Image 1 (cartoon, rainbow, N blue to C red):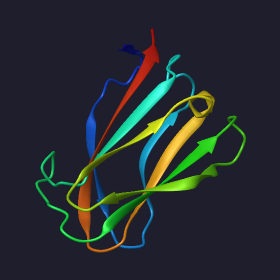
Image 2: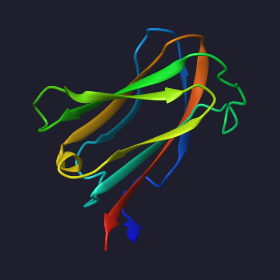
Image 3: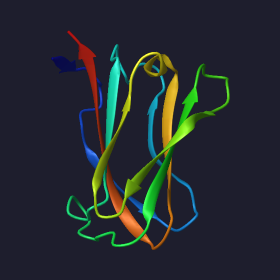
Amino acid sequence: MGATCNRMLPRAVDAALSPADPIKMFGIGREGVLDGGNNLVVTFDCSGTALTGVPITTGNLVLTIYYRATPTSGLVADATTVTLTAGKIGQVQISPPQTANYEIQIFGVMSAGVTAVAVSSLTTRAG
């Protein structure tokens, strides 16, 4: 059982994507937004039913997670990418030690079609 602990309460936002054009779909960190959390779950709704009503019928959403260890360091890509199938809802879960980073960003690229994706997040602390 975990407790919600991020200062920014869970919310959904739309991100418009074009093929082969990476866009920052999620970015947190910056001085305590995780607020002691040790588990971050980011949900990507590619079904078109959450906010936009624009269904994704072809292609995949490829996500790359980036970490910034300190305020002055550069973003470093995680070695693993996450691929979500069109028309589905998927999640990316980030846990220690990565949640101890100064900043976490997730960039997405669509393999085909111009579309929109709803993104929401929840940070929890074990306890």
